[in-house]
Structure formats: C-alpha cells, structure tokens
Image 1 (tube, rainbow, N blue to C red):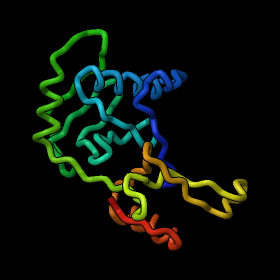
Image 2 (image 1 turned 120 degrees about the horizontal axis):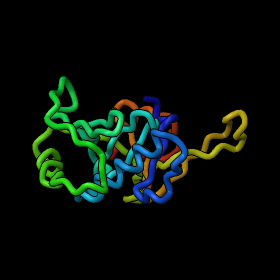
Image 3 (image 1 turned 30 degrees about the horizontal axis):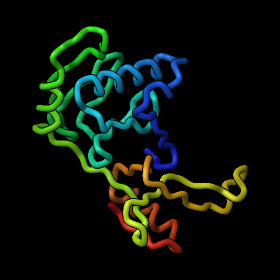
Image 4 (image 1 turned 180 degrees about the vertical axis):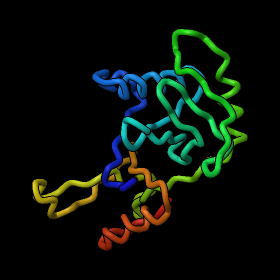
Length: 170
C-alpha cells in the first residue's frame, strides 16, 4: 500500500459516514473494539480491507471479512485463532479473548516520521502550492493522526523526499 493512499477512519465513530456497507462495517468494528476495551485503535488504508493499528505502534494480526473480525496468531504465515462476529448489541465475552490476543499474538511494528527538533510532532500529510498538479509539496506535522508507514522502507522513502527537514523514523 502506498503511503499516499492512506486514509484514516477516526476513533470517534460518530464521524464515520454510514453510506455504504464498508463504512457501516468499519464503524461497527470500531464500536465493537471500544466496547471490548481496545481503546487506542485506528483504521488506515482502504475501507474494504482496513489495516488495524493499536496505540500508533503496531499493526494487529487480524482483519475484517464481511462482518467478522478474524484474529490470527501472527502477521505472517498465520493461523486463525478466532473469528468474532461484529455485534455491539449482543454482549459477548470478547474482552478477555481480545486482550489475550493482544498479548500473545505476534503483531508487526509500524513506523512514523517525527520531527527531530520537536519531539512528539509527526508527519501527518502534505499540502501543495499547486494542488491540481501536485507541485510544491510541503509537509504537515501534527501531534495527532500521524501518517503510519507499514514498512521501515516506506518511512525512509518519506524522509528522503524531504531532505530539508530534520526527520527521524519512530
């Protein structure tokens, strides 16, 4: 996935528009995870198959398919350990299962690009002087909603594209 195509579905599920099946499913996914004590969740990528990020630090070894959350034991060559129906109306004991999954499965690290001169400030996106032609690319830094890179190489490429800024991979 190119870092240029990353969009964010916000944790505040009231901001998620409910106009198609994927939006409804992703809203339900966020509500389900929040109700089961996984509070620092962010969905990135495309709405059809979002990447699930926890604490801005790891890509969880799980995915959504239809209206099910599929938990895996690892992010590579993984076995499915559980399938949970996304249902916030029916109370199920998913909290202990999800917390166990969080601590026992192997998740993959994610990367952010930080401004060395201001710790806690991260690359969040870009503005362009000429938006129509994508010319005059200028970085936008923020404390919240940092751009997430799934590979070290993608984060390094972002740094190399901005040689005039003191950046580091976090």
